[in-house]
Structure formats: structure tokens, C-alpha cells
Image 1 (spheres, rainbow, N blue to C red):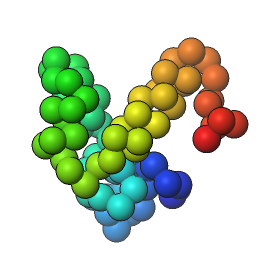
Image 2 (tube, rainbow, N blue to C red):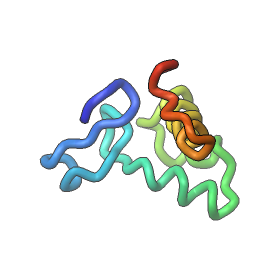
Image 3 (cartoon, helix red, strand yellow):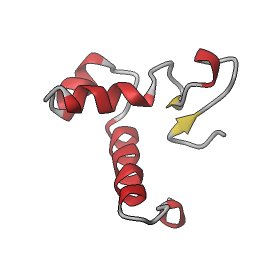
Image 4 (cartoon, helix red, strand yellow):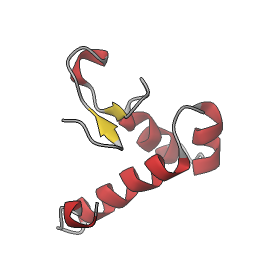
Length: 74
């Protein structure tokens, strides 16, 4: 699966979903937020991830939790 926000390929971290164009796993964003870090803290730590990518991942997660795939708006 590849799109402009998330990339998942077996030759990149064994298929772990990463932010497209990076080797930063999407789960790292969630882990930072769970630890109480601000989005800006995460982005400062991982400058290869754009703010728009991070916000889109959070929007998709919100849509999934709300019971909508959110893909129609992507």
C-alpha cells in the first residue's frame, strides 16, 4: 500500500507502515502523543515528516475510530 501519506512495503522496515518518503514508523507519532508530547515536539524530532502528513494520519485515525474510513475525503 502506497499513498502520499503512508507507505507500507516489505523492503522498508519489513512492511511497517511509515510516513511516505521516510523511514519513520507511523506508530512513533502515536507513541509520542501518548507520552504527552506535542505534535511540534514530534515534528522537531523527525524533520522528514511534514506537518500535513502527521495531521492527515491523525485525521484518518479519528475517522476510523468514528466508524468511517475517511478515505473518500483523502
